[in-house]
Image (cartoon, rainbow, N blue to C red; front, side):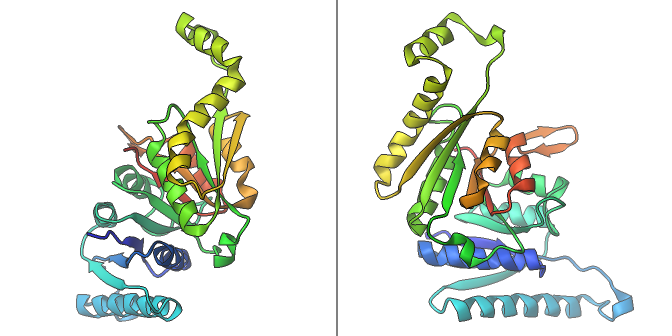
Length: 290
């Protein structure tokens, strides 16, 4: 069964930009597009829409109009729409189960529109089974022009970042774009130097050569699988979030991994993903581990 690209729509400018991004990506990948709106009746007597039937009709009409605008721009694209009577978190997390990716609108520095960032958004990203892409209102198709890169953060060994690299290479292949693979490193505390780690570092010729070797090994299977994709390897000392944001100027999409965990105060998605989501001006894809 072909999995669609799913866009969450709430009528905001940010979600409409996300819908446009999702439609273009669906066309590139030859996939259908599903548009989802999570809705529950909320009385608004003062503006004359106090009954559920009227509100539901407004929601359906808005969703249908958005779908029509997409099919006018992309006549061959298969588009389906769904109004789901459930909470935003449950609807959006469930939507990721059978989707290639979920695309949502984001305000970036503040909260993410409607159903995102803050506790609700972190639950969606933390619970998603497949990648979640966040798009800002000002995003334009021109930002995907030739010469702009897919930037992906790589960490740990090849297995740790396999899902993130796969998503980045698949996206670059669909767009004819370059992948810039970024690996940030910092000096470890003295107690981290074990005899085994010192031996590895010595064999690699030092810390930076060791990091470059680790990045090259992680990239190797994806270079072989996508030989048409040009790759730039970027190894730099610094925090991962800062290094990723330092190369954002030519980025059409930034791809980061998710390190979700549950705490007493809710879900956490990892400091790198959290920082990039708030500060990167381009769309950001957060990829769950395999």
